[in-house]
Structure formats: structure tokens, C-alpha cells
Image (cartoon, rainbow, N blue to C red; front, top):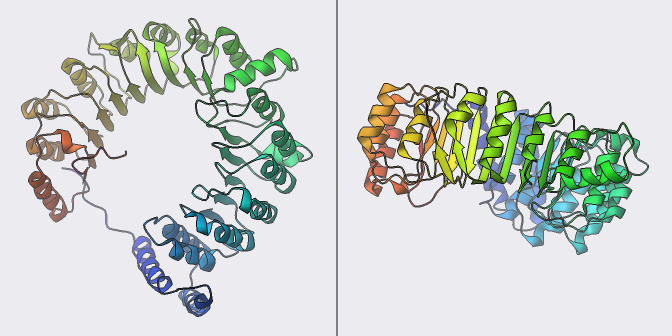
Length: 487
């Protein structure tokens, strides 16, 4: 049977109760002037309760993450709970009229923050002066997420006032140029040593010139990741061919590049000896085979590639592979050949698979995650993947499932699915509530089943099944009919 719902932890119950009391009290505050008395009462209440800094932080982040709440309640909660001992803050979404207020509170009360995520507060021209003040005051930040906000002046202020930042997210549509990047990295040797992750630019768009990004790679000796930038290979090629000391290498562990040619791939291999994950889109012929020269590679992501080149590569380094994320393939993809060469593979995700084949039923002994959307999978190929993956935890198939209840019963009663936690067949018109019953019975760890709108499963069936799940305290989520929920 599916597992039973665990008993809620006392911490969770208590936090929820205190949060409800806080929300109720703050909902009665109608203006800044009215806030003084409730704030005094609440502060005294938390002090008498012996609320620790961890509790106040959990309470604050619980309220801020509840985006259905009135923004005034979330704002007042920030004013009340953002004390000197709160180290982490995720603002969540706020409407534009609250941007100034949120910035002022963080600048005044957030001096001891080490982590600040302002995704959802999109500061622009009229509020940038407050952003500068905030950066000046928050000198202990190790992680700062300000997507769609940064410009050259913001980077300059970060470079002048922050020495311990490890993660900086300035991704999205921004006005960053070489001037700002140079200002960030000039006269701050501690920051240069500490920065390891910089999220910059927008996926698929070179809104920041690759030569400017090359400055980051050259001047940050401990940089491991340039998240959201899609032309890292191009930047590496610029360094390798125009301005590179003879012994220069990077500590990059992840590289994303588009329309990669052999010259760019040579630069990646030469400058990135620690690379663990590579994502290349529309590679030229011969580029993929060069991945074999990356000694620490274990995860490959490809878009618009030739299947025969991937098979040639995996014949040589498949034993290293833990994850394959593939989309837009051309040619025939042979799952049996993957099972032979990638004995340690844990995850495979495929979108738009042109042709899929299999031969012998060689097992995927370590495969835990299978996700295939638009895969043109035959029924026999699907059965092979299901029955020859003994450690399977999550199975998502976006194609039409032609199996019926009897087929599913034979598969699940003849094979053990001891680890299966989630199964998603959004287009399975032959499956009914009988399969739901059988899955609950045969899969002791099943906790997610969806999306059922493509099944022969009526709203009445859904109501009955949810009633059974609730009455038996079963820890299983049935995704709602009509939408394909997010995993």
C-alpha cells in the first residue's frame, strides 16, 4: 500500500498556529500609525514564549511565502520580525506600490542578513537609490538574488561594500556592461576570492556580451557556475585565443553553450578540467565526441543533436554518466545501447525524441528518474523501461499510453516497484480507477499520481478516491482533473 501520512511534527503545528495568530492580528492594522500597539503586544508575546531567532525566521518566511495573503500583512510581518538575529530573507512577490517600503525595511532592519532573495521586488530607476543604501548596509551577505534589477552602478556598489559574497544572481534583462563588471571586480580582492556562483544574462540571449562575461571567468579564480548564461563556451573561446596565460584554467563545473563548434569545444576542454555538467545546443558535427576529453563529466544536456553521435560518445564514457537531459534529437535513439554503456545512469529526461528503439532487455540497474515528453515510444519500449528499472522512483511519460488496466496489472504484479514514488501518465485513455487501486496496493512508496485528466477517470471517481485516501490517512496526492500540474 501507499505510505500513511506521517504525524505532523510539533514544530510545524506550533509554527502554523502562531502564524495564524500573527496574520489575524496584522490583518486588523489599517495604517502605519496603527501598527505600534499590535507590534508591542506581539513582540512581548513572542518574548514571553521564548521565541528563538530560528523560530522568528521560520515564521517570517512562512508568512512571506504565502502569496495569497494581502501584501500589507506580509509587509507588516517583515517590519515586525526582521530582527538582528534573522539571517535569511526571501521577500516573495509584492506589488509595485510596496517596493519602496520593502527596500526601506530591509535597509534599516536587515543588517545581519547573510542571504537575501528579492525575486518578486523588481526595483527600477526611482528606487535605485534605496537599493544602493541597502547594499551599503548589508555587508554580511553571502548570497544575493536580485534578478532583473542590476545595472553597472549596482555592481559597483556591491564591489565597494561586500567582501564575503559567494552567490550573486543578477540574471534577466539588465543593463550590465563591461564597466559594471570591471567595477565589481576592482579593488576588492576578498570578493574576488569568495564569489563562486554568478547568475547573469538570459537563457538563449546574448544580452551581455561574451567578452564581458570572459572578464568574470578570468578574474574570479573560484568561479564554478555562470548560471542562466548560454554562451559560456563563446566566452571561453575568447579567453583561450586572445588573452590567456599559458597555464590558465578555471574551476567551472557547469558550462552552457549554443551552436558549439570544434574550436569552442577545444577551449572548453583546455580551460575547464573540473567540468561536471555540460549543456550544448546545436553542436557542429564532431563536437559531441570531444566531450570524452572532459575527465570529470557526469551529466550531459543536449538540444538539437544527432543520436548516432551521442551513442558514439557514450560508448567511450557512458560508465561515467549519472544524468542525460536530451531534447530535439535526430535519428534513432537505442535504449538498450544506453543500458549497456551507461551502467550508472540515474536519470534520463527526453523531450522530442524522433525515434526510439530497444533490443535485448538489459536492465537499467541504477535508473531512478525517467521523464519522456513527445518520445514516440512504442508500448514494448515503455514496458521495457518500466520493468527493467528496479530502482525507479519517478516515471513521467507524456505520450499516449496504450496500456489498459489488465496490462498495468500484469506489469505491476509481476515486477516489484518498491521504490516508485511518483507516476505521471497525462494521456492514458484506457486506464481507470482500477489501476489507481492497483498502484496504491502494489507500490509501498507511491505518493504522487497524476495527471488523471487523460484517464477514463470521472470527477465522481476522483471524489471517491480522495475520500478513501483521506479516510485511510494515505500519503498520496492525486493531481486535479483538467490541468497538468507542476512536478
